[in-house]
Length: 298
Image (cartoon, rainbow, N blue to C red; front, side, top):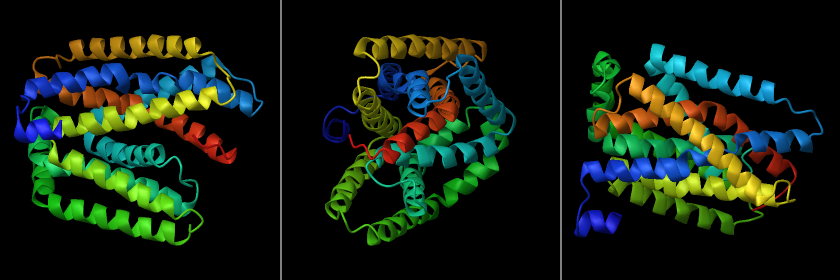
C-alpha cells in the first residue's frame, strides 16, 4: 500500500474508505465476536459457573454506558477511549511480554499511545476535517485547533514516554534480551508505515492487518491449546455475533443519517468500533491475563 501510494497509483479517499470498511467487516468486527466463548472458557478454567444472562447484561451495559458518555460528553469519552484503547493495543501487540507488572503495564500503555498518536496526530489535518463535519466537533473547534497547534509536541512527548518505558522495562528483564531487538524492529516498521500512509490507510493497516489479525490468531491459538471448542463452533460463533454487530451498527447509522458520504461513514465506523471496544477490552484482558498466569506462549 505504501509503495503504491507513493510511487504508482495513489488511491482516492473513496477507495481508501471502501478498503477500510471491508477490512472492518472481514476482520475488525469478527476479532471481537468470540468474547462469549472466551468468557465461557475462562469461567470453566476458574471452575466457576457461567451465566449467559450475567455476561450479556454486563457486556451490553458497558457498551451502552460508553455510548452515552461519547454522546453526552464527547471530549471526556475520547480521553477515556485513548486511555483504555492504548492499553488494549499494547497488551495485544506485546502479549509475549510481562504486561501484568507495573513496568509492563506502563509499557503497554505507552506503546498503544504512540500508535494512536502517530495515526491521529501524524495526520491531524485529515482528522480535523473529519471532526469538523459534526456538530460536536464544531462545538469543540477551539480544542481541535489547540491540538493542531501542539500536535508535534504531543507526538514527541508520547515517543519520549514510550522509549523511557522501553528502557526501564528491558533494563530489568535481561533473561530474554533478543526479544527487545525483535520488539523494536516490529515497532519501527509499524510506525514507519502508519506515519507515511494517509490516515485512513494507516488506520486500516494497523487496526485490520496488524491488530485484528494478531488478535484472531491469539484467540484461535488460545482455544486450540487444549481443544476446548471445535474449530467450526468458533467459526459459527464469530460469524453469528459479527452479523449481529454489523446489523446493530447499520441500524444505528441509518437512524443517525451517518451514511451520507464516505467521510461521515469513516468517522461513524470509528465511533461504532470505539463503542464495541469498551466491553471487548475487558474480555481480552481476562484472556491474556489467564494466558500469562498459566505461562502459555503462542
